Image (cartoon, rainbow, N blue to C red; front, side, top):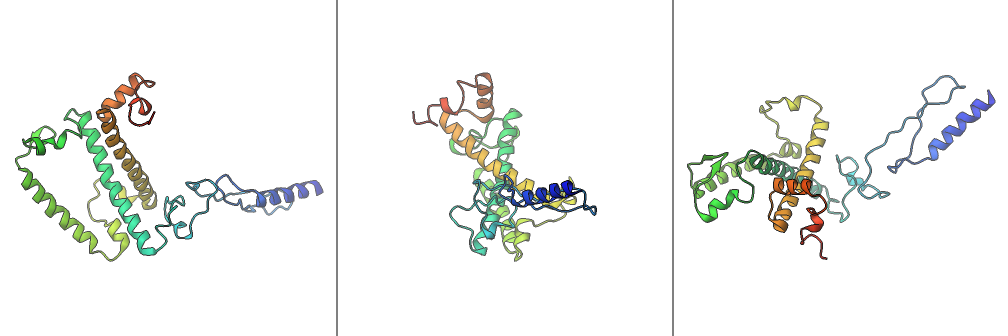
Length: 238
């Protein structure tokens, strides 16, 4: 029917010219052998950029969860980009461990992150979940130095960049490596970024009001309008 054919053609032209909210051109895909039926339109969109309307640098196109973020162009060279991605992943893993430890110890009633290392300054002995650790500060530092130096030496000796970031190995008690590795890597990266921001947050928070994360959360839930970043007397300059 002429009207149906005209409507189908108009739909195709509109789709070709339309842009999605993510800045990607919508490309129609015909999935019908019947010329009298309107074609189905399928869009292949990717996550939006950190700055709406900005273009993704070519060297970040295939990088997971980059969101086109490199305003200073620090990753233009391949070696720099590889180093930055590796450093982000390593720091994200440490931040996730740090946040889990800080919150876990406080929730379980074994002190808080700020007071935990003060034994090394004020004298005393360390504890681990309430159990006395029979080592001096010097012994703990020596153990940590040997363990970290050994692990990082083995990791750094890998010539394959992917092996340095994802060394693999038999340790996988939860079987997480058996699923979709691409999705797992993306989740790890996003959670690592969140943990790094969270760690900066709890450090700044304690500097501002002297409260631990759980104490600050309780205070905010008790009085959201009077216990927040705008009322701690430090965050806002007025």
